[in-house]
Structures are given as structure tokens and as C-alpha cells.
Image 1 (cartoon, chains in turn yellow, purple, red, brown):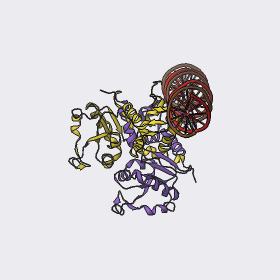
Image 2 (cartoon, chains in turn blue, cyan, brown, purple):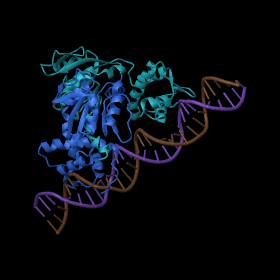
Image 3 (cartoon, each protein chain N blue to C red):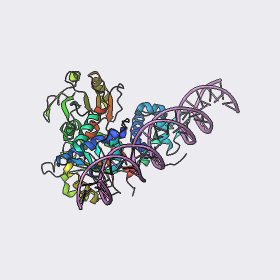
Length: 207
Length: 207
DNA sequence: CTGACTTTGTGAATGTGAACTCAATCACAA
DNA sequence: TTGTGATTGAGTTCACATTCACAAAGTCAG
């Protein structure tokens, strides 16, 4: 058992493992081998074992991994063992879709608030959340929201980001393709839908 | 000038460069240096030069890169110089957001059709596109649609994928977190929103 | 208890990309 | 035409990630 630093790429896979384990657990399974899990999440068995080996011995040779113990450990590493409240900024098409997206709850996130600048949208109820005025972003600190999801038009992205940083937000999931600058202590993960689509044709044989 | 194989990570960055170049072009600029572009797209200058060096000499030493020549070349590499028609499968929250998403047009995609299985949604007009019944997916080949965007619930993902493959789809942008299996000749790029959010807390200092 | 079998954990080899450096090249002014 | 300043292009090194192979460690039947 060696406690090396966990590689970034491994961190990227951990949520995938976690979801797979949760599904297996729901099926009433208590233990799983690396090769079974490999089939389930579509990642090689040796990759899985290597990943798990970065944070201790969780398997039993000849048997496999205890789903509960493993899940608990992954949650701890990803800091998903504490509740995280998230706010969605931008209640347009994408923002509304994010508000309604069921996948976040799997990981225990609480989507707690939504904001927009458009008076038409403020006050609207989307998925049981009332859209507030962006001018109230600064109250996020008091409400213990530490994560924000940015789904505003490109032009507004940086301004919104600045407000979020002032409001004490620690992590941002950014759907805007525009680069946003933040202080080092704030982590940004960007999902750039259009550029992901744009590299698809590269892999398609022409003709 | 060496024509090595272009690394995957470089391909991932090419669309970002392309968008940056388009914006600069709109500002009336004709030439840009790697360091200017670096500021603009938030990627290191040497990384940019390295990336461009994989496919020929496009810069002029002492001056920089011709925006037009470079854009044209990147489009050619990504095969964005030919028109690509795309279909969106699933007209729920996420699917509707994708249909309305303005970012795809930057890269010259034509979002040409939308499908759903829900009779409530079939016939609805979203962003000038009429939602069709999924049973008509097989007509996609005739309509020369070669790319599909999957925005259906997890359960339906594999079934829809199979229909798409039968309809001759070559590339899939998959928003479903479920692993989908396809023949080797079909390229899948998955955007797993929830797991991207899930690794955010890892990078947030606790307390 | 023993032997056959299963599965993990990890060292080593290989592959890949990022970071850095600097010589080669070009524009331009004098 | 020559010197100066700017900028590219690419070789090299280093860091990280994947892949492989196998010993170690466990289960289980008889």
C-alpha cells in the first residue's frame, strides 16, 4: 500500500467508478471484481486496479472489492462525503436544462439556487427553484453555496465570474466557451460543447 | 516542416484556436503571433507553436501567423471545410437546449433534425425545427446526416445508438453518462456533465 | 491441510504530451 | 546591404499516464 499522489486522469475516472458502483449496489451486489467493473464502466481492468492502488488496499485477493467500502473511500477522496450546494447562473435554455438534469443528485449535490438578469425570467419557477436576480449573487456566501454552474451568454461570462468570486465561490463548472479568469484558489472546469462537436468530423473517415 | 501524426490533445485544442482566430478576424486583424493568440485563448505560446508545427509552416518568423491561411488549414484538418449535418435525438430539456445552442454554427454545423419518442413532443417546433418520431431515424442516411447528438435518458441510450448506427451515422456526441457500444468505425465523444461536476470538490480546499 | 483457482497489487516497460530552450528565419530601418 | 529585434520551428528533457506481466494473497472443495 503506497500513498502516492493521485494522478489527475485517475481523478477524472473516479466519478465514473462511483456511478458504476452505485448502480451495482442498487442491483443488490455487495462485491465486485475489477474485471466485472471493467465491463460495466468500459475501462480496462488493469487500469481500474492501478487507479484503486493509489489510495490503499480495498480489494480482497481472490474475491474482489467491497462496493460499500470502495464507494465510501472514493466519496471521501472526491470530498463528496460532505454536502455541496450549487447555484446555476443563467436560466436560459442551457441553464434550465441543467436545473432539471437528474444526474447531479447521484453525487449528492444540492442545486440550491438559480439566477438570471432578465426580468422576464426572474421569479419563474423552474424545477422547484425560483429564479433570482443576479444582483443577489453576493448572498451566496451566507447561503453556504460553494459551487456555481455558469450557463450565461459568452459576453456576460467574465462579469458573472467576478461576482461569483466575490461571493466566495470555490469551484465553477463553466459552459461558456469564453476563457474566464479567476484567482488561483478558485477551480474552473470548462465544458465546451461546441468544440467537442467540432472535433468529431476529424475522426470520421471522409467519403 | 514535418508531417507527423497530430496528437489527440492537439486535435482537442484545434477547435479552440479556430474560434479564437474567427473572433480576431471579426476584429479586423489579419495576422497574429503565438503570444497574442496565447493571451486570447489561454493556452501557452509554446504549446500553440508546437501544435501548429505538426501540420506545416504557417507562420512567418518575425511576424506571426496569417489568420486566414491558418483558419483554412485547421478547418481542413478537422474536416470542417465540408458541411456536416447533425441530428439531435431527445427533445427534452437538454435536447431543446442543444437545439437552441448558438455555438455550433461557429463551426459550420447544420443542426438539421430533431427526434423524440414522446407523442407530446413530436410535431413541436423548437428553434425552427420540427420534432419527428424516432421511428423515422432510418431516413437519416437519405438526408445525408452523418452526426448525431444523443440527449435521451440513460435507459434509451443504447437502443437509440443502435438505430443511429443502422442509419449510417458516423459520429456521435453523447450526453448520456451510460457507456454506449458502437462498431469501431463509429466515433463517440461523450460529455458527462455530472461527473465533471463531481470532480470539482476534489480541487476545492476543505474548510 | 493441501492444491487448484481466482483476483489483487505493483514494479517495470512503453507511450504520450508538456515544458523549455535556442538556432534559424524574417521584416524593416537606416 | 547590414544590423536589430521579433518570432517561429523543432530538438530535448522531463513528467505523467497506460499497458503489461506476474508474484503475493486470498477462497474454497475435498
